[in-house]
Amino acid sequence: MNERKRRNQAGVTLIEMLVVVTIIALFAAVVAPRMLRRTDTARVTAARAQINAFMTALGAYKLDTGIYPTTEQGLQALRTPPPGVTQWQGPYLPAEIPLDPWARPYIYRYPGEHGDEPEIISLGADGQPGGEGINADIVSWKTQ
Image 1 (spheres, rainbow, N blue to C red):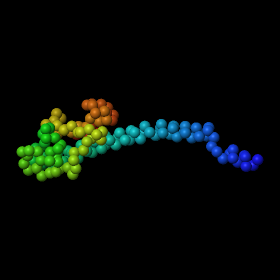
Image 2: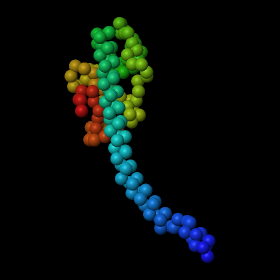
Image 3: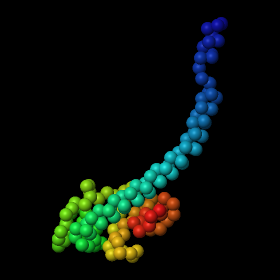
């Protein structure tokens, strides 16, 4: 009789298992959105850092050549000398031009619409102009 009692007490009941699964699901429901927001925040921070690196490289390019690359020459002028540009001393970036954190190319304009410096834009998570939050554009002429 003693052995039979022990066998009945050794296992986990279905209700105990459901309670554990429910607790894990509730924990995941609370933690997952917070982790996703941090991922989005990290992407925005990475885009800003990359735009700042581009602006630094563009400053060095202008010091050497006397002018910023045109819109047509684009950011690629930081890696390979554009035709007809003298005094190019690059490459001004150590690696190929990266995509933004959402795997889309950065938009480069010079001359731009917001001052005398080039404009670099990432369209954010939604890939559309404008937007709010993580969908907002990350732009070179605003510090946030």
